[in-house]
Image (cartoon, rainbow, N blue to C red; front, side):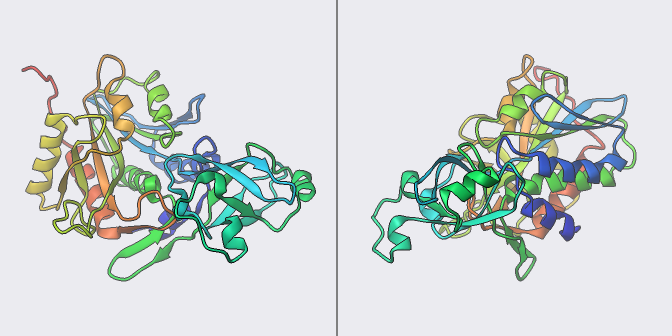
Length: 341
């Protein structure tokens, strides 16, 4: 495991629509291992290993959940709007990084009037009640270029835990980005053409996946993402350390049966643990890819994650390594995908 790279990806700021710093890291890491590297007009990074066989697309999104400044109070507190799915009650007392036009490094803390004044919190916490305390006045904020529309990213740092566990922010989906980078490094030669697509704005509508398909014409696709773990359930389906997940169904799409069978078979033959997922919540880039250009056979390979859409997602290194192993092995022998034969 290249823990330093995963740490760098996790710690990088890249709220939806503001992914450039993450893209720079990925470009630098993957460039020596691919034949072609381009960035489309929306900001998706597309890396290609050329081959004459099937065109196989692997996608992971660069963006993370975050906030945007919607107003600045007279006494210099920032009021914010959510970017992606965030529970406001989980944000109180979180550290944040605020973008400024002068690129000045500005840190702050999310609070509420009640929290700041040592008063009892209301039973329901709303996004409107959250405030960011930077220690600066409104005039000082204006001077360094913090305005309406400034991005705000969570500022928790990556840390190792015990027993192959670790935590950090933005693991959804920097884990997927890490997997694609490491996979590109391990695949020395390929008969098939492999697209490594690092998408933007997944958290706000899967937009990068949709636009990237206009210039690509893959035969099949796999979205590499995370899957919400349920270890604390009485009968858990997805647990950390039990292998990557293969999604059968999520809230918006049904994965391609042949692709899933291919991945499950490869896992069994090579003794790689996997977990099957049927979910009623959430979806991934695979949805927009699957309904592009008349239909592209698609599925999702996920890494179980605790504390989804918080500043402290928890994951396991073994699940990531097994996801890379499974993809490396399976991609050597992709399935026949004529669906009606």
